[in-house]
Image (cartoon, rainbow, N blue to C red; front, side, top):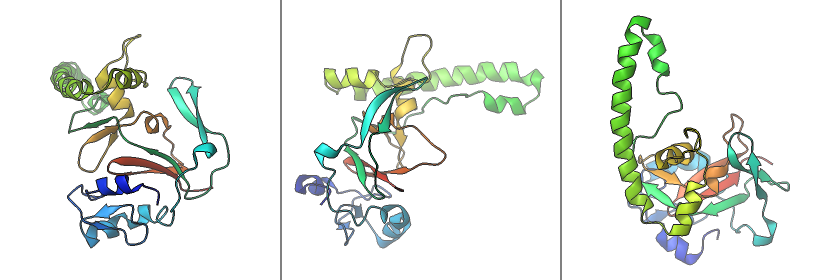
Length: 219
């Protein structure tokens, strides 16, 4: 199986709603569901990799990490990748409860209001955002300090699209790299986070606790 026996024993949450789940996909045995309803809602995504039963060979790595101009580091393929192939299997280094993440342009909605109102609304919005950001930074800090020193350093090397001059923030890094799940939690991966977004993706992401998985959805 893709997951080792120890990994499979760790899968106790439904892949859809994150509730406790005792049933697994009868075909691949690598993903858990709490009900047939959740399984049915996830089948379109899961069926792409359901037939796969072999792990990615360590000597057949399909990607390398390279600098991407304006985006920090990114992943680039180094060989042909087949449909359904598992490319990355990785545990998140941070699993964070519901926090308010930064947006690239939080003031964009103000453009809908009359110009005479925008300045006062911007001041109020800035004040509210600061309070939310301070709360989020505290929450993230509590999770961050539980990491090893080496992992902390690797997290802080991730790209921060919100950084001002040369100063990064933990909130900025998590906002840039975090993957928000259906239960509201945000996951941060050291490798998966380096994948670039695309309007025409050739891979998909699936999280089956405790592992995130990247697999090819086309050759």
